Structures are given as structure tokens and as C-alpha cells.
Length: 404
Picture 1: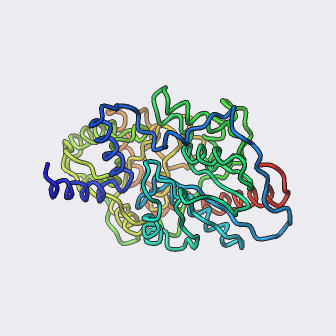
Picture 2: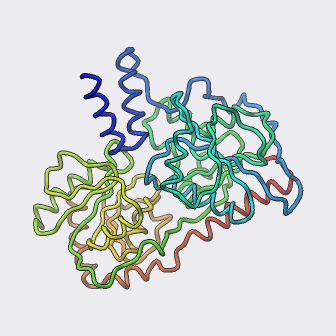
Picture 3: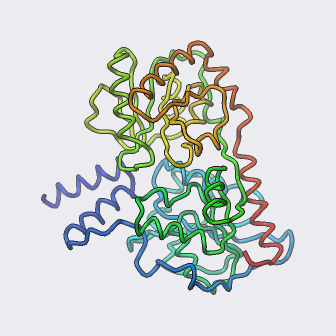
């Protein structure tokens, strides 16, 4: 492939999958070129640490109750429209609103520079005031540091003598992202570093209690009900699918098989996909990629049913669909039910035909209940309790001056 063709291909991958997708393909090509077929960890070799050998000399940087804090957040894999990063930035905003200063340290994980993410953050999360820094330039001067994924937990644990409390905001039980192997064990070891654990939702907390004997603070799942709401004058007949090819826990292949069977049953119902751009679908569909919340709400308002699959923590999409007056179809398992309690959810066994039948039932339920009542079922759900839990936990640990 020539230089120009390669450049065009890179631009297309970036538009479709964001920086993580481009990085993954670039690293993958490098692995093939050098005969290295190792698992892509997005973690530099020297940053992998051992929980039994790390220094644990950190202490809270401020013991004065009520004093404004400086909190450093270590992030990686930032991509436009990322739901996980949106949740993180909600917590950053909460701390800033409470009078604290936040600094975002970007860890690239493949040796690139972090500064390039500043513009992306300003464009997609404009309410965040935090300064954006490249972690490779050094980390210092904060009262607290927050890891936001297992890779960033390793990076923080490596800085064992750095003054400042340690926190770990866990949005999923990340060993489940991988088959049993090196990445699985590296992710599991990150929960043994001794950081103060804060989980988004009960599913992750349950795993940490059962597998690691931890007692995490639970920040409950929320939803932006002001951004996702039903339009009263919008006809609905479609089904929308959150498509994440290449991410096993999102069940993309299962969703495609289910939608194929549903399309055979109901060829009159339009199908939409969004997320990572779906290709070579075996049915007609309107394919979207990353969308802003406003664009998503408009799309949801053209649909009566939505397919929101996740085999680890529940997808945020399910509650967003409900808020917009759409009936979500969700694969049934204990992890999802731990964090989604709503009357108008169609829980289904994760097989193609069961999901196809579930989508058909969701259309019937939508017609019987109506978008306004569906939306009202989650009207009291907000991110307020989660924001309060994160702010309270960080303030309590830091102002007490106790080790995290």
C-alpha cells in the first residue's frame, strides 16, 4: 500500500474508531512486522508492576479539613463519544464544582504524546476545566491521584513514593475484558495495589468483594435525563443497536445474528446502528458512528426498541434508551440486573432467536405503554448520587490525612 493510500486508510480508521482504534491497528501492524504476536496491552513494558513489590509510601497530601484539593486523574484510551470517559469527566466536573482543582494526566500506553488529547477533551467535554498534561512529562504536586483503568493503576503504583492519596475509579471488572492470560492477570493484580476503590455500580463492587475481599465505595449508576428525553410529536418504528465490533463484552456478533433474524420477521422495521461503524451487515441498516448526546437522543426518538448488549457491567445505553422513551432489550445475567432496575426492560437469554423475539416484544411493549411512561420510569435516576459519593470519598480520605 502506498503512502497516500495508507494515510487515507489511517484517517478512515480514526474517523470510524477514534484514536484507540487507530492505535490498536498501528500496534498490531508493528507486531506482525517484527514477528511479535503478543497481546496488545496499551501499557509500556516498564510500567507493569507487581502488587507484592510496590512501594506503599504514599500519604494524603492535605490534612486540613475544608482546604481545596488538587486531584490528578490518570486517563488513557480517550476517544470521541466514549461513554466511560464521559462518566469520568462527570466526576471531574463534580470535584471542580465542589471547589477543587483537577489535572488530567494522559497516559498513551504505546509511547505517543498525551498533549494531542487536549483539543479532543475540550470539544467533547467542554464543561471540564482541568488542565491536560502528558503523563510522560512527570506527575507531582497533587493531594490525590485517581486511576481510571487497570493500566493507569499500574502507572500510579509505579510511583509508590509520590506523596498523595491513591484512588481507583472502576467502571467494570476489567479482567473480564480478556481471556485467561497475561492481560487478565495484570488487570486482576491492579486491585491488590491498596488504592481506595470506588466502583460505578454494584456489579463491580460484588466482584471486588467476592474475588479480592475489598470493601469499595459504590457510586450508583446514573443517567442524563435532561439530555435524553422523548419528543411528543415524533413517530417511532425503528430499532437501534449499540454496535461495538472487536469488543467481545459488547456481543456484536450476537447482535448482528439477532437483528438478521428480526429483519426476516419484520422487514418493515428500520434498523439503525451506532458506536463503531458496522460493516458488511447481512441486512439493510442505517449505519452511524460516534454521535453526540443530542444526535443520539434524536436517533432514539425514531425508535421504539433498542438492543443494548453487555456481558460485564451494564451498558449506559440501556438507561439512556429508557429516558428517551425506548424499550431496551438486554441480555439477562446477574451483573446487568445488579444495576438496572426498571419496569420496561425486556430481559432475554443471549441467543440470536431469543433476542430477535425480544425485539419484537419490545415493539409491542412500546406500543402498549408509550414513550412518556417509559421515560417517566427513570425520571428519578441521575448522576447526582454518584458525584456526591466520589467527592465525599476523596475529601474524607484527603482531609483525614490517612493513607489511602
